[in-house]
Length: 214
Image (cartoon, rainbow, N blue to C red):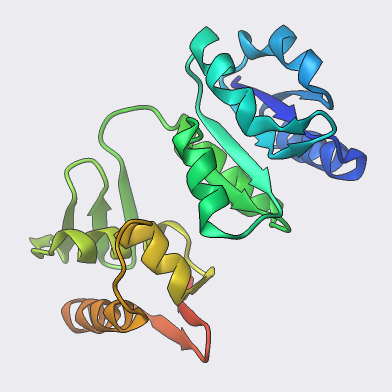
C-alpha cells in the first residue's frame, strides 16, 4: 500500500481528501503545518503539498525536503498564473493541480506518478497507445506520429471526458517556454482526427477539446 503525505491547512479539504484517498487504497498522513512535515516525509511515497500554508509559501521549504528524500510532489494551489506554476515546478514539484479540482483528477495524477516504470499502454477503442516507446497502433497497425501529435493524443486518451482549454493544452504539450498560438492546437487536433477516425474529439465551443469516453 502506497503512503501519501498530504500537507493541507484547509480542514474540510484535508478531511475530504484523506477519506477519499484511503477509500481508494492509499495510506494517507495528513498534516496542517510545516513543522510536522519532517516527521512523515521519510515514510511517504508521494506528497500532495498545498502551496499556501499558514507559515508561508511551501515552495521555500520544498528543495530542503527533497534533499532528505526525493519524492514525487503534486502541488495544490489557487494561483493560476504561469509564473507561480513555473516556480513550483522549478522547486522540484512533479505536477500542479489548480483549486478547485475534482478528487478523481487528483487521484489520476497520483496514480500516474506512482505507476511502476516499464511498458505502459493505454487502450482506447481500436487504439493502443504505448507511453513507454511513444508508439500508436490502430487495428494492430503502427501509425507514425510527430512528437507533439503523440503527446497531445496521449494526454487526451489518459483523461477521456475531461475538457481541456486550448491554453492548457499549449502549456502541457508545447511547454511554458514555447509561444505557439492556439491555432497550433486546432491544427494538431485536425491531424489526429484525420489519422484516427475512431477518435471522438469534441470541440467545446469557446473553450477547447474533449475526448469522449468509450
